[in-house]
Amino acid sequence: MRRLTLLTLLVLTCATAPAFGQGSLLSYKLKPAVQKGQGYPQILLETQSDFRKIDVVCDRDGTEVTMSAGATKAGKTLTFDLKQPDGEFRYDCEARGFYGTGADEFFDLPMRFSAFLGGALSINIPRDTIDKAGQNLKATSDRVVSKVQVKVYSPDGLVHDAETEMDDNEPGDELWIDWEGPADVLRLDITLFDKWGFYVFEQIFPWSLEIPHDDVHFDTGSHAVTESELPKVVKAYKDVDAIVVRYSKFVEVQLFVGGYTDTVGDRSSNQGLSERRARSIAQAFRDRGFKGKIYYQGFGENGLKIATDDGVDEILNRRAVYLLASKKPGTSPSMPTGNWKPL
Image 1 (spheres, rainbow, N blue to C red):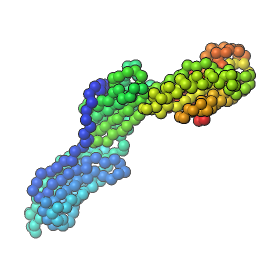
Image 2: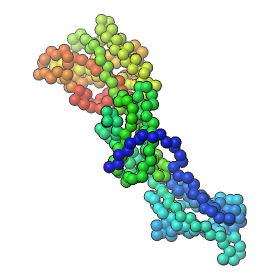
Image 3: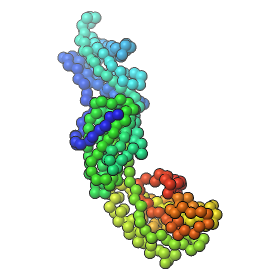
C-alpha cells in the first residue's frame, strides 16, 4: 500500500519529452506512447542529406522489426509506425541511411527507447474510502502512477491545490491520497498521471446538507399544500437559497425532497400519498424560484423516524426531508430506496 501526502504545489510539465539522436546526416525524435485506437508509436527520422535508401532495423524485446524507405531528399521527415501489440516494449534500433552507390556507403544512427500502446488510464475511487474528517481517500489504477494531483474546494473556494510525483507503485496498488484544508469539502478534483503523460480525471462531490424545517401538515388523505402551511415552505426556501448562493460558485446544487407517513392506513396507499406530498412540496420550492434540478420521492412507512407498530398515529413520522447535494443520495436506513424522480 502506497500512502501519498500531497503538500507541495508543482508546475505541470510535459509528461514525455521528444528524444533526439545526434548525427550529421540523420537525427530522430519519437512519439513513444499512443492510446489504443489512435495509431501507433512512431519514429520520426529527419534527414540532413540526400539518401537513396533508408532502413530501420529494431529488436523489440527479442522480435526483429524492419522498416524501409526509398530515396529521400535532405530536409525531409520520414515517419515509421511501430505496429506493436498492446503494452510497453523496449526497442534497440539502428537507422541506416545509404547515401552513395556502394553498399558500404551509409550512415548509421543507433536508437534505444521504450514505447507504449494501450487503453486509456483508469481510475477507481471507492466512495466509502473518502474520509472528509481524516482528509484522505483511496484510489487505484490499472497502470503505474507517476504523479497525482488533487484540488479541494470548500464553500469559500479552492482551499488545497497540490501535486506529487510517484516512484514506487504497481498497477492495482492502493494509493492513499491526503489533502489539507477545512472539513467542509464540496468538491474533490483528482487527476492521476502515468509515465507516458496519459492522465485520468475524476470529480467527486462528497457533500450533502439536510435543511432543518417545520414540517408541512397536510389534510387527511390530501397532498395539497394549503395557504396556511405555505409559510413553512417559504421559510425553508430562504435557508435553501442562502446555501445555493454560497455553494453554486463551485458545485451544482440540487434539491431532493423525500416524504414519509406514519403507519396508519395500508402500506400501499401510504406509499403513494407520501410521494404525492413530496412532489407538492418540491413544486412549492420551484414556484418560489428554485432554479436548479429538483427531485422527489415518497418513502411511505419506510424509514420511520420513530419505530412504531402498524396503525400508530405518530406525528414525527409524518414528515419530509429537504436535502441539498450535487449528486443523487445513496440509500440508507432513512432513505431505503433511490427512486428519485425529476420534477
